[in-house]
Every structure is written in C-alpha cells, then in structure tokens.
Image (cartoon, rainbow, N blue to C red; front, top):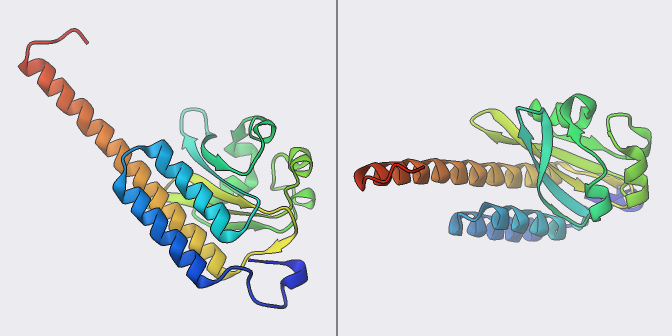
Length: 197
C-alpha cells in the first residue's frame, strides 16, 4: 500500500512484513479455539503489518442481513456504534459478499460507503474490503481503513484476502468444535441419565 504522495514509489510495506504477519496469524489460528482472541489478534496484526489506521472483521447474520462486528482494532467506540451495517444499504459489503475485493480510494466521494459523515469524523479516507469465504460462501467481510488517500496494490489485496481466508477457517473450525462439543455433551447426558437440559 502506498499513499498518493508515494504512489510513484514502492509500496510502504515489504513482503517480509506480510510474511511475518501471515506466519503469526497462522500460529495464532492453529493454536487456539478461543475465537474472539484469535480474530482480535488477526485484526491487530493486520493493522500493524499494513500500516493502516484500522481493521475490522464483521460476520454476516443471515437472519437480519446485517454484518455484526466480531473484531476490530484502531477505530473509536463512537464510530463502531454508528449504526447497523445492513448489507442492502452497504454497496461495498454487498460487492465483497459476492466474492470480490473492493477498494474505495476516498469514502467521502464514493456512495458505496454507507456512513460517509461518520467516516469523515473518524478520519477514514481509503478502504479495502475483502470477503471471508468458507466453501465458496461468504460469511462476512474484513476491512482495512487508512487516514489518508491510499493506493492498494495487488500484494495488499492478496495479503488481506489470505488473512480473511485464515480467519474464515478459524471461524468455521470454532463452529464445528462447538457443534461437536454440544453433541458430545448431549450424548454424555443421555448416558449418565441427566436429561434436565
């Protein structure tokens, strides 16, 4: 990623930074079933590796068609509480949920961004948004935000896409683990005669 002032030069971040962040994310994801902790670690390391203002991960609630905040780093509580992210009102998220990375160079002039006034107050200028995919199905989005107009390069898109994929895998593994644990608990309750659930 480069700011417009540096867009003629090389990206700000090196491949080494991205590889280190990917390695750390992979270690975190494979070493813990504490989903909240894993996702928080991913958004924090993403923010630091990409040298951006912030990163958030939101999961789609199919019942409400809203994206619910699962992890975030670098944004104020006021901004995070600005209002619901309904997919039908957020073109950036609608596009990403169809499996396409979306870049918005300047949220103040791009109608695809739902909360332009809140973004301006927060100091958000550029956004890169990628889908979280599980078995060719989008389950949410991962966004990075900058506080100055920025150019996202293919390396940036690929890096964020890989981290989103790792996050989606962690989410799916945690869901499978919870399902398995509930099944096991149910079997044990039946075996031991405890049916008070």
